[in-house]
Length: 115
Length: 115
Length: 115
Length: 115
Image (cartoon, rainbow over the protein chains, first blue to last red):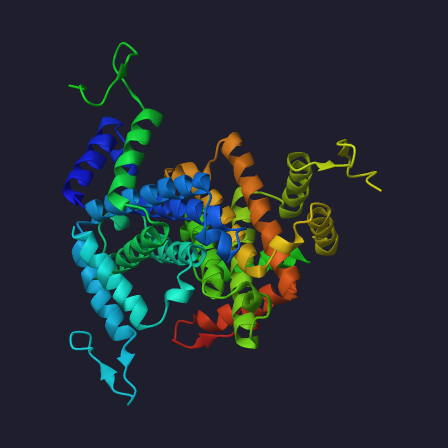
């Protein structure tokens, strides 16, 4: 994913519309949460089966909401000077410590030499 | 951003813990929304100035919540067979149509030949 | 429900802790959304059956999150000078118009003389 | 607030539209969170000053979203057999313990004999 190019487009889009003054991290965290709820709304009355087999219309809608979430997420990273790829990789290491794998003898299984 | 490698790591992590059965798109949309609110929580009582100048501790916390949001977002894309980069680019084209630029004569400015 | 007494207690609690300056409607809408997500989190990995038959521990947890949501909701009403009971009754009238009942002949059934 | 009458109206409204099967506590927690985000959306780009001085149009919009939140909150209480007033009063006692008042000598001030 060419995230640098996406960042450039997002910044140009925002600058062209003079939206920069509104893009405070506090406001952006609200906008991100609103978009996450718009994705949630698609699934709220669906059964688990329906959620796994979206109609074409709902699938397209979900894709657009997912994109909106991603755009605000990248926008916040720009504002907070966070490298998203590094943040993900660091968090996955933390998650591996938080939820360790245990082998049949009760020994913790390290990720690198797990099998 | 090497999103294919991140996808592999997320899938292995989930498979190793036998979490796949829980990772229905409906449930994942809930988890994503919960993580978005954990980011929101960091900013809820801050002034706009404080939000733009996070303490180191709050900045690290925000980075972790942002990573959690990204991980669930990528997870949903995997489940719904959505290419995140394509989704972002398509949505930005839609946004340009939704929020057109107008020049000083009231004419719509097309993005490609805007200057 | 003695909502006036609850309002008094909420206001005294906030005043005693000098929290009034933080209780701007914008901040309160964030806090409310955060609490709503804490309720959501209880249900995120549960099946519909499990959600309808909560364990005692999860039921108590849900009760506390529901109370937090109610407290912030009442707090916002106080700040925006909204009478919650009137707001609910007015909205239910709007909902009846938005989702009309249709009888077997395709005629709209009015609520007051529905049977 | 005549909450018993509101409950009756909410239940009749839902029964008349055969919505009961969708009103699982899991689904309702999603709907509640979606409504909380619709309130959040009103405030997302406003300054704290603007948020405290809503236009009439935004105030009416906020009132409707607040009502929707209250309706789903009461609906969840009905489904989980929770008395909302009791839940609020119990939670406020917990909050007083969680955020104790300290007098000028560092002694905890009990609520009942605080002054």
